[in-house]
Image 1 (cartoon, rainbow, N blue to C red):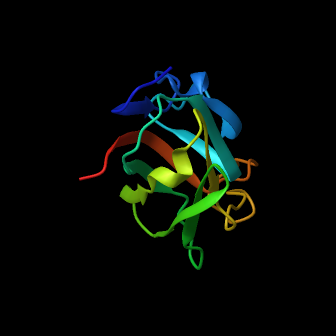
Image 2 (cartoon, rainbow, N blue to C red):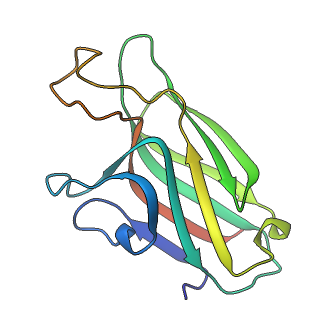
Length: 142
């Protein structure tokens, strides 16, 4: 059972598969990142905390003319953040302790602007992609 601080590394060299629930595009060629489609989920058991947490993700958006990716974040079904993602980088959000009252934690990333790179003329990749995740961490909020 992970304790806080908790971190996840993506890519074929990362440990994200231990908690990946659905929506992740596993590719051995992507050593440092993992692409997500319209919806991606991480599920893990964690120690109970009375404290708010800070969620931090490092992502790379699928970039195409006229398409700005966005991420809607839910924790155990509760909405916690909305991020427009125009450039690679780190996004953060506070998770209130009341959303963490049970040990089973489900983080859901909803990305409605996921697109097919082949249809956008970016590559021959036929997967539906939104953002590539490099890392995720949960820390006590300051």
